[in-house]
Length: 67
Length: 227
Image (cartoon, rainbow over the protein chains, first blue to last red):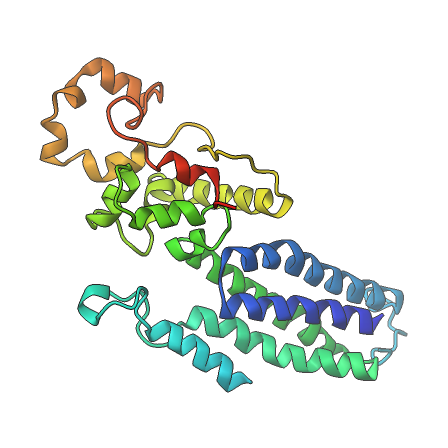
């Protein structure tokens, strides 16, 4: 899951760099409709992974080095 | 690679927009590097390094993972969004989309359109001519323009536009009045002093173009690029 999250975030970052180098209309469309959802999905996948590991619970027995 | 990217941005920042000599391209929009372009890259590079390690190794320390997957990419996107918001005011940005290319090209041509007249006489900024006339007046005008920009992007992405392209709703003549209302030459025109005409304009029952003034853009430019 961490690989998927990293891959989605990396795709989003490549698009952000493309926009920064060439801020044009088509690149802005790519940024808004591909990059933002990819980044959102990456963060969501990572959040789910952490949640499944118990990172969001208040259980003190949670192992913080579980990733 | 970083050097190549920075050199590309620096070259663009220093280059005159239309290749004109310094006097004819003044004032330049950016002096030196355009930090709005550089900062998203500065945020993206360490994030990309972390993500590549994550992909190869399949695990990351929580603090590093949060930095690489959440904070740095979100920062890059926030800065990128700021760049797009600012850059979307430029004529070159509007003209970079297929549908708008002929309209932007028509600004440069000898013609009888209101936009070309304003552009060629230097009555609007050559950098932000589209935004100046289409954004309306004040902060709400800017907000409306940004919302219209999102609509344009959606229509372009889904190819749900039709030719000839038409203005969405009545044109906000506050954009015109922002410059013209206090001009003596504008006030001196009999038609502008007529109360009925003034009411019709304010109620948006009438526009500046169509009856009294020539169309804002030539008809052939509204039909998209010649295929």
